[in-house]
Image (tube, rainbow, N blue to C red):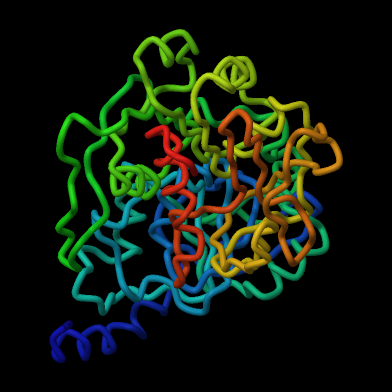
Length: 395
């Protein structure tokens, strides 16, 4: 809890803080301009502008490597009220190019907070736009699509940014996975938290089936869930060869989430193609798209992507509706897949493919994030099924 005296002091300081606010402008590639105020790094930053409708989880989003190359716009009214802490980070750094919000709370009120969002992002050199009409930005993107743009937090007038915004590049044709992935293999032994203080259920024993996680931008939550299922986890760079993966005796392979255009990820299809049928394979988000491409399908870019924590997905085998967390701009085109590939999940909002399987080869993949429970743990069984396949049991 924040002491009452500190709260009153911050309120007394507020008028002085707003006397001379720094202006900020978000200029899209189609020439549209939105105005607000600036915090964090004083700079002009380019990126593809996307919005996320989740009410919570801003720290997880900002540190998710899947947001590399993007300016993240959050639709929730207040951002920063619970601060940030080391436990909630999905990686070692902030990957989003910049953050745009309606209201930025500078005084966190959570007992778990170790630092305020504004100070954290400023220390890490991330530009923040606040006071923006987020509703207008979202309505525009839903019509124009996830267009590139420039967020100027350094006082550059918007007229001087239009040409730069029009020349800004989105994620199409970009192999961003190589920029966020690990360069060397490493072991991961930490499981999910078993107490609010952050005590974790760590891995134990060498009799656990070893699994390889191909890192295209993996989230730590995925690694924790694998450990929780009794698997011995080793994270490998995307440049690893199939011969190395197979020679090391891995009982299964996970293809992780990540940023950018799946069709541009160098070497992925060759690697995955040599693994299919040799070991069980699980794909998540970008990993699902890479599996779809390897199996002969095509990927397409969605108009403004799926970014949020309450996307309804139907599991076709059971007709259950799962409430899922999602973060992707691309999807596998269902009609492009060969007949032997089974479609397992469908998005109930727009009908796009959300899961696929090749049962005879022990392959399963989902487009959503089963590790990121937005409230219900609807999709947690995916990891249990994968673990059973790695143990040679019936999935």
